[in-house]
Length: 494
Image 1 (cartoon, rainbow, N blue to C red):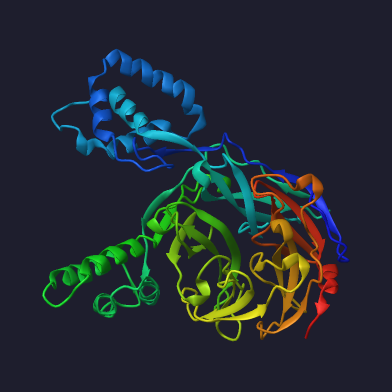
Image 2 (image 1 turned 90 degrees about the horizontal axis):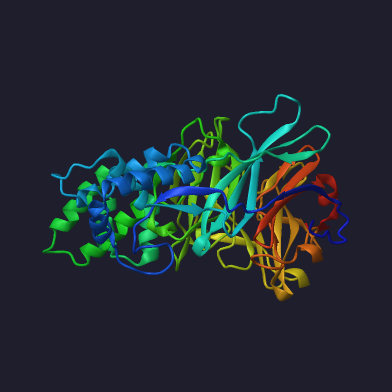
């Protein structure tokens, strides 16, 4: 259990400790020569030649052995092999007839297991479960950052329950993690305009493509405009760059769907676009109520391509199907965008840390274009002097918006404090923690990244604040805090 500071706040440890499990693996398509770590070219051709040259008896015996060793680790492994084989069949002479065993062998040769939690499990956020508890408690969902080989991050989930007696439990995860099926999504013209400005692309080319499209459009509509741009070689330059950039950005809008027979803990959000090709990090989920009273869940996360970071938005109603799309604007640069659970003053609001060291508030008309942000908190105290940031979406209380914050101090030690913002004017700060209420304890300092406690969101249930948090960027614990005590502990500023 990490240690509480003497901030007048009782922090209760519930004995929950989620550790990374290297046995949680997904079966992914594997292209020899293009591994996750290190550059290289495809070796598919020579591998296929060797597969086709094998003796049939060796093929049958190897497939039997593969199924004996791996079938119990995956749901419908044969179907996975067939799907992966279909991705390379264009390299096989169509006159060659493959036996079923050789087809499965081919698919297995282009498959590998990836341990999604091979290195770490950290940085959770929490929301109330879409399905209520029938026994008087509160069910919840955790999003988790799972880190595997090559520091590659995916987004996973866990379910749990806060019982009426205050006991916190987390369910055992399902046995067969899987990464879901993706399809193209809907594109937002204003977002693509803003992203192209960020990338410094040719303004005239961008206007030619986007200004003729509706605010929301699909791949077919975009392709028609890009074809016209490509044909205009007489009056335009740099068309190839614009086309490549727009196609890459378009792939950042996609849908992910999972079979309803899977449990939520088996659903893994796996990167699908170039912007997030090296990982999806630090999701911050929140239940948002729209103007018509309908509610859904939104999440923001950091997309990493190996060099650059950007923000993406997730929308889901049931945690079975998900819509992903990019966000843009100066306030969405960097990490740490966290949405408010409702509109403020008729507009969507979010916490931002676009300058990498202060907490700020930004507004948007559509959740996707975040222009300027107003700084509301700067690092001034010893435990936060290096930088500040939010720890997830604000929580609405009668006294104001409660924002959990992280501060980074000497020895790059992360600790968690709080901030209170005005309900109608969240740019106005009402109070702040003089000291953190949670910091790394001596027994919990060591791990993947030492001296860190960090959360991407908390959940208020009456006067109880559920705070899941990562320890040393390696494992996850859950604490509860009395909400009233935490609010009382804040130093008034308004």
